[in-house]
Amino acid sequence: MKSMLSVVLGLAVVGAFGAETIKLPAPDADSGVTVMQALKARHSERAFSDKDVPMDVLSGVLWAANGFNRPDKRTNATGMNKQTIMVYAIMKSGAYRYDAKENVLVKVCDADLRKAVAGAQSFAATAPVSLLITADVSDPVYKGNWSTLSHYDAGIVSGNIYLYCAANGLATVCRGTMDRDALKKALNFGDNIILHLNHPIGYPAVAISR
Image (cartoon, rainbow, N blue to C red):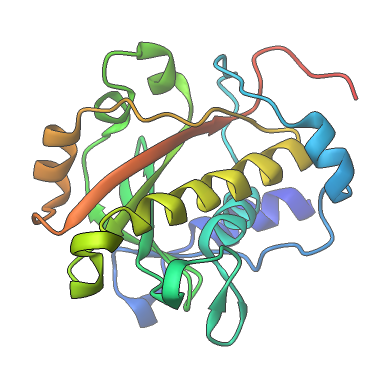
């Protein structure tokens, strides 16, 4: 009953944020295992079951990736505290930008872009959700010697995703492969948006024994 309620709440469209916005359940700070256990369990997985990822779990992995753990600071470290990383949830129902302040998903595209995220590696399109890690590098600081700064930030976000998935029985793998041109067009990204990495996420096709 509790699980069903969380899914219903997660799928509810909240009028206060507009018709294309999904309010996420609050992330469960007590879920998962210890950091050491998560590090021990962390691995890449490329086969996914057809089981959907519940909204409360999706909320947790998004918060781990790029949420706020203090009023103005993130769960992920970021160079010069620029907080330029933006995470998108790519699902069958469309593409959504994660608004960490409001803990909502804002729909930005109606199309299922999982094949575009998968690119030449079709296995990735079988995951129920892919997290797309992007960065807005319009700030002048990203010119010259600091041009790769957001790359490091994206790697930190990827590490957070890996640890959350390992701690909560989810399968994932960090990927640089994707159809960047198709995604930029579909998501209406300008030249200042870099598509760094993506993480297909789901439950493993074969249950992992702990």
